[in-house]
Amino acid sequence: MLINTVQTAPIAGQKAGTSGLRRKTRDFMAPHFLENYVQAILDGIGSADGKTFVIGGDGRYFNPQAIQTILRMAAANGAAKAIVAQNGLLSTPAASNLIRQYKTDGGFILSASHNPGGIDEDFGLKFNMSNGGPATEAITDAIFTRTKEITEYKVLEAQDVDLEQIGTTQLDDMTIEIVDPVADYENLMAELFDFDAIHALFKGGFRMTFDAMHAITGPYAIHILEDVLGAPTGTVINGTPLPDFGGGHPDPNPIWAHELMGIMTGPNAPDFGAASDGDGDRNMIVGRGAYVTPSDSLALLTAHAHLAPGYKGGLAGVARSMPTSTAADRVAKSLGIPAFETPTGWKFFGTLLDAGKATICGEESAGTGSNHVREKDGLWAVLLWLNIIASTGKSVADLMTDHWQRHGRNYYSRHDYEAVDSDIANSLMDDLRSSLPNLTGQSFGDLTVSKADEFAYDDPVDGSHTSGQGIRVMFEGDARVVFRLSGTGTQGATLRVYLEQLETEADQMKKDPQEALSAVIAAADAIAQIRTRTGRDKPDVIT
Ligand code: VG1
Ligand code: CO
Image 1 (cartoon, rainbow, N blue to C red):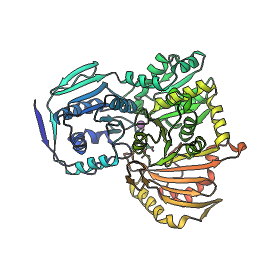
Image 2: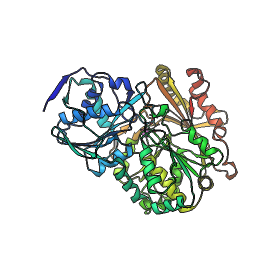
Image 3: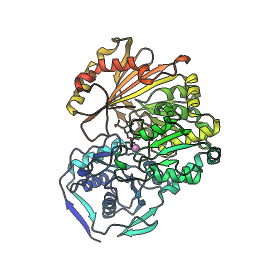
Image 4: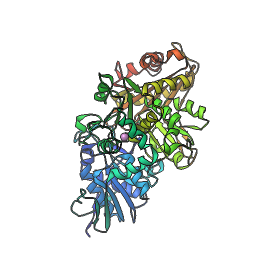
């Protein structure tokens, strides 16, 4: 075999963000960039020698070429085997499942998730560990260190591998197993959910629209919803994965999934609507004329999960990321189970899931999942909702109204200011940080600050400490604002402002969220001077 050892310069500063490394596609395509990062990963995890990896991606531009490079490098670095999804198309949750099911040493997931795709857009690469979850901070730090010192990488000189045929092939000494990406995932879902009840629901005339947003979930959703569960053909829209996602942002929120929102609020709207993101790990849930915020979705799923066969014994606990609303905590309290609060990013749920402390986890950004894999899982959430609807016979709107009457309603919204000048964003956060000691007791309109801090986390399982995870300002009367800079953007900085206000009066549950939150929104601006500093008069995206 011909292994080339290529001399190269370090690619310093390639630090993985919230969910792997994301850069402009052209950066990833630049000479040696992808190769250096892949070698840094293989070095950062110890070595590739004798190991088995899962490889696949969300189908975006450069996915096929990048997979071939990773295969050649894994082989040159001594990997024993690669399990590759047919045509390299693999959703993030399905990848997590394959890593676990085949007891591999980890996997390479090629995705920039909700970021747009194309040669002028974004690409990403993430390494998941043998538990199926995103690499921990210790591993991503080791990879980052390697990016700064790397001087050479190993790559096999070989032809591209044909990834179209399911079966086994060789790349020199490395075995490549090409698998059907949907089959194993479908089996897992069939174990967790009452497929017969959902089948009967569709048979009874229940209608839904699933918007795959031209991203990876199309084939999974068409097979599971239409072929297996009997939903009518056409239930899944935008179901063919495209390298540029049809020019859209595959981000499942009312802004980017506006086609679905139009259908759900239009005449003849179906009973249920859902969408998923670029790599299939996030979800949007909407009833007829009733959008469900992700934080509320997590709370509702926590309250009703026992209706699905996979969770009939109840939940060990629920975990949410810090900026996610406290709605799930209120359910946990009523169920008598623990609620955990972690930093943003799925990697922080891994230890809790592995230790059996949490069964369901979720984030305000529309990621929900459970201990069935170690990633958030868009279709899983959709199927659990369908299972709950089938078991209760209630509509989405009625389920939510009942939920609020029982637990109170946490009005919630996230305001994003995108592509802000990095210096401006950083100084805004720095100044906020320095103002923290003086905030307590100050009033902004009718709201008085009860506590203000910067979130840090001590993992209750492995004891690891993570700091600088967002600035929280709590107000008397169960209101809160959180300020945080995104770790997934590729252009300038994105400031995320998370707003929350609890309402427990039964007759106050039907307000427009922006209206219900107006006092918190005003306080947030007064505290951080967002408009003055960024020169923006409103957020770019409100979800
Ligand atoms: C965003 C979300 C976060 C999510 C992350 C990855 O991160 O806020 O909750 O875990 O995306 O999701 P940030 O740092 O931009 O706020 V995905 O679907 O892009 O893998
Ligand atoms: Co995603």
